[in-house]
Image (cartoon, rainbow, N blue to C red; front, side, top):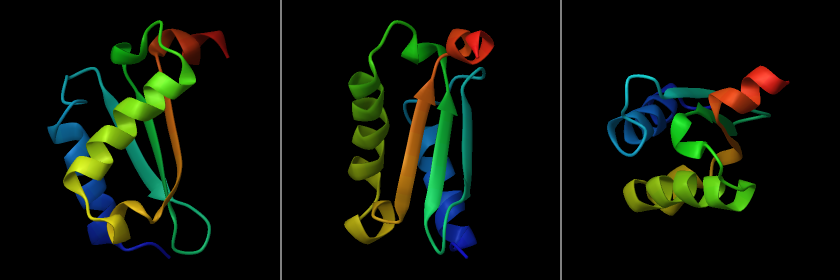
Length: 87
């Protein structure tokens, strides 16, 4: 089971940084074993390719967390609201 304090810290880093807008949704949940999953829904992803989305997410994570912390993240997904509606 992942560390709840680390999950909260990851959420706070993302929500307090680039994804701070009211409409940005940041979800941090349990992955397999002690890994963590991160899902972000944001208009900041409009028109961006998958690599660009991942670069934004991981830029925030690696700037504010140490390697032991961000190394626990086994899945990160960034989507725009339009992409969610289309599914």
